[in-house]
Length: 123
Image (cartoon, rainbow, N blue to C red):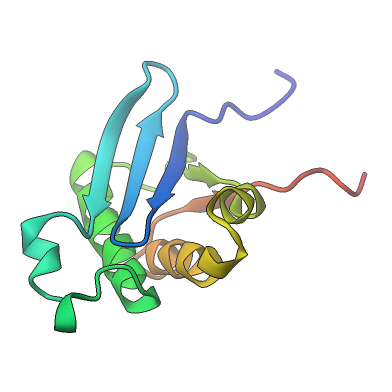
């Protein structure tokens, strides 16, 4: 086997109003866990309705981590969630860099094994 199979991948969606984080199973294309500031339970916890800032991103990451634990995807059995931070920042725009990192760090701090992808710039 040449490379590591990237079965579970973190995909982020950031708009002016909402932040959504999905973990997708690439074997079948289905979302295995999701968290979003659009959810009523999360939206009601933000002060002044600010659902798309770095604090909100941390909450999304923490909720996603809890949901991944329920799905058994944080078991440390070699499985991990793949994420290409640079690609996510490029897609979302530089102004969202803090939010992207806030989600990633919240996942790591909550015990989820994140596998950070790199562009293979160095050999």
